[in-house]
Amino acid sequence: MSTDGSAQSPQWSDLADDLLGMVHLRLASPRDRLRLTAVCKAWRTAVSRLPAPPPTPLLLLMQCARLHKTKRLCGPDDCWVMRVPDKAEGKLFVGSHGGGWVAALDWSTLLIVNLFSGAEVVVSPVSSPNPIQTVEFKKVIFSEDPASSSCILAAINHRRSYIALCKVGGHESGWTVEEMHDKSIIDISFCNGELYGLMQPNELYGLMHPNEELIKFKINMKVDGTPVIASRHPLAVERRHGRERWAGHLIELHGKPSMAIHDWWLPNRRSFYKVFTLVDTDNDMAYKYKWAEVLNFGDHALFFGPYSSKAVHVTVDMHHGWKRNHIYYSIENLWPTNKLPDDAVHFVTMDNSEHMYCREDPSVGDGVERTGYYVTGCNHRPMWLCPPLL
Image 1: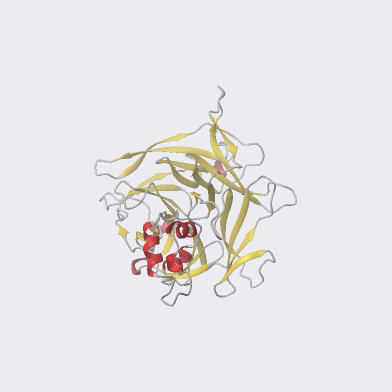
Image 2: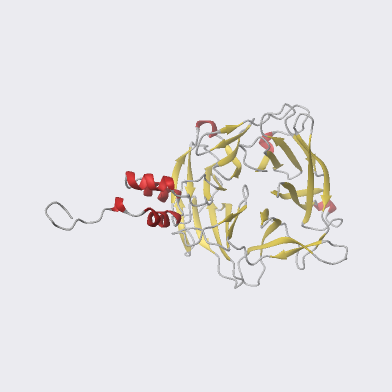
């Protein structure tokens, strides 16, 4: 009651912490979470005491022709501009790790930097005996958080002909290289701390080796701490039925190596992704493993792209958020156009008839939903980036 005896309207600042926490957990967008804390001091204080929702990936759009300091970050249905740290300006991003870390590349150096905090970790330069240059790197992956001194970087080059390894911390020996010779590297991934590679035989040797070959690499450390591939272990994997295709992505899903293939699986349908995981055959035949199709990702959503792919835990019932058992993928270098598909549900206009638009794939009745993020033109590159806790 007020001093004059009239009823006093409740104040938003008096909202109970548990109710505020329910709202906070259901906000998928980092920008919405920041807006929540900006309402009043009481809310900002309360949110600081609440457990933060697990971060989920955003699609980072990078300009290639003019490497500006500003980039675009896109969520499920919104987009905003962010400024990157000075040290990342003018560089291309060729990999990411949770918490906002990226592998940033220019003509002479590779930089590991956090786009949100500005923190940087030291990476060894390429030493003269190695026949590589970091500018050749197409993709860089991380064995763990790059802030850890035990983090190993693994890279593949544009020709997909070798894997390069380096340990963060600036070891003098720099990078070590493993040439693949008769195979092309489709993708690489760390799974349970071990490095796997998905291989495709080069055309010259195509009749000699099966497609979708999975190799497990044993990594040893030199005396100075530099990682080196000590041996390769091709896994005895039974070949799938149907056409052999270049497998697009290799990820860890539920603790197992898993691959995603984008293909025309059904007649009179657009191409779409299927996901296969490595399982034991449980028999005494020549093949110990086989690729089994996965139709239930549990509480995860899958994100596929040319520079970063991952399985991510998704909180249920997030407002305008990512959905469980859903595949999200990015495709770049489409023909520039100002005419977007009629079923585009979200789009961002950049410049020179270049756009990023989102389109849901038609359901194929397998219980998995799929959504594509398409980038037209050749001046912008998409990469999935998982921000820090906000």
